[in-house]
Image (cartoon, rainbow, N blue to C red):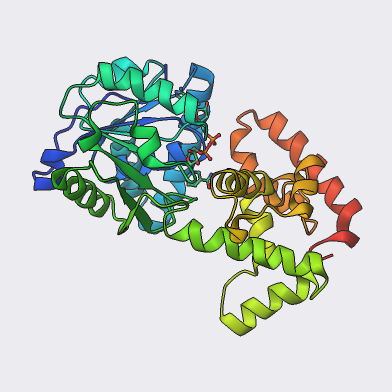
Amino acid sequence: MSSFGVLKRSFSTSSVRQVIKNVTVIGGGLMGSGIAQVAAQGGNNVTLVEVNSELLKKAEASITNNLGRVAKKLYKDDPNGAKKFVDETQSRLKGSTNPSDAVKDSDLVVEAIVENMSVKHKLFKALDEAAPPKTLFASNTSSLSIGEIAAVVNRKDKFGGLHFFNPVPVMKLLEIVRIPEQSEETYQAFVAWGKAIRKTCVTCKDTPGFIVNRLLVPYIAEAIRMMERGDASPRDIDIAMKLGAGYPMGPIELADYVGHDTTASIIQGWHEKFPDNPLFNPCESTKRLVQEKKLGVKTGEGYYKYNNLRYWLENKSKDVLNKNEWTKQYKLWKRRLKINQSKLLPL
Ligand SMILES: NC(=O)c1ccc[n+]([C@@H]2O[C@H](COP(=O)([O-])OP(=O)(O)OC[C@H]3O[C@@H](n4cnc5c(N)ncnc54)[C@H](O)[C@@H]3O)[C@@H](O)[C@H]2O)c1
């Protein structure tokens, strides 16, 4: 069980929080821990559910670390204010390893577990039996159909997609996905909650990839196909889109950043469902990279090679809680950096 404190405070009385006040987030990985954090920052009582106490601890450490960063930004010259912010937010968070128990008093459940339909079905079936009739259900899936996920629950009128973006505390957008059975009341509650946790909400139907990924994934795949045909080099494609279209990152760099395992599995799923759509054709070079475990920035190599010390410091070092272990790993990455100095991005 996590050491998060159990909620003791009462909150403001805005109509939003009267509808959604107690939130359960299932899955404390990359997305779930971020969703739990922003929900708690927004004044909700949050229960974060993981499969075991070790993973719960990891999620807790990641949230504590991120909250510290947010506090530093918000309360630059006010250490007392920063401490109060962190303490109060943490007091609204608790952990659990029992999903059925965790939804007993929940107004909203946000699911952010592994991207697998049968695992999500098993979870939602159990939650549908355990949660009170008032509880709204949402999935944060990136690539699965919300309607198909909802097929196993009786409360389809209370079901929808709440699609956050990584990193959740930083990215402003929330896609709210409607299914035909969703009630207007549920939709309005999702919109109000999205605003309450300070996200900018957009709405769409239950269409593959929703808005952002439906445009982004075929764009990335098209850039990779361009590179595979030899029409232009990865470097030139990236520079062209940055300087010619004003994008902050080129499509090949972006593919490395998102991770080739993620994009390959999204596009493979769409391809199997819509084999006649050429925009959803899997890319051969991406498949090869996945086989070679060159997944992009997170493994140090994809279409480009990366300075892994920086990646480790920004993303992984916070998970190492033991000081001696931290120093050991830091030295290791620094040594690797020296060896790889000549091979840094772009190739
Ligand atoms: N990673 C992204 O950029 C991103 C962006 C938007 C949406 N999503 C979606 O969010 C979901 C989660 O993705 P992620 O990147 O956070 O994955 P992740 O692997 O980082 O985290 C998933 C977590 O869920 C936990 N889990 C699995 N089954 C569980 C269960 N039955 N009960 C409780 N916990 C369980 C796992 O232990 C793991 O910690 C997926 O559906 C994914 O498509 C991901």
